[in-house]
Image (tube, rainbow, N blue to C red; front, top):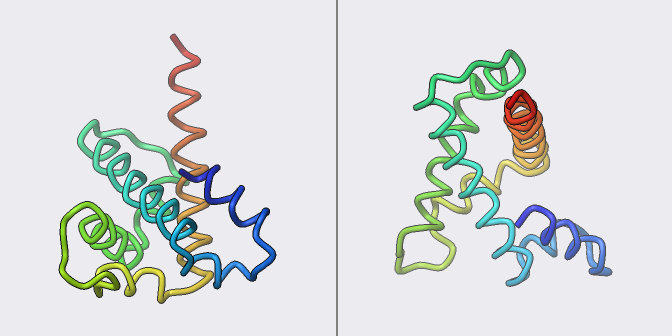
Length: 117
């Protein structure tokens, strides 16, 4: 989903904020963000540790909003623009940067663990 969103952002002639509200861009972003929270849940359940990941996860407001975003994405709600979705994306570029950093940190750590085998 992340690569599909990035491709959409590159191919669209619109600004990033406009793409995020387009149907295709929003769908990719929503599935990516929701899936990322599932990885965080697994990370915690397995008791994995990494300094950078832990630092990013300690930013409690973003993590809480990401959990709510996942719930809003994966569970039916009557209103399309449910508050669980708009609260997180309403944080703007800062929350998007946090998601990218968290995605990269988790990915790097998990891939390094796989290379050990």
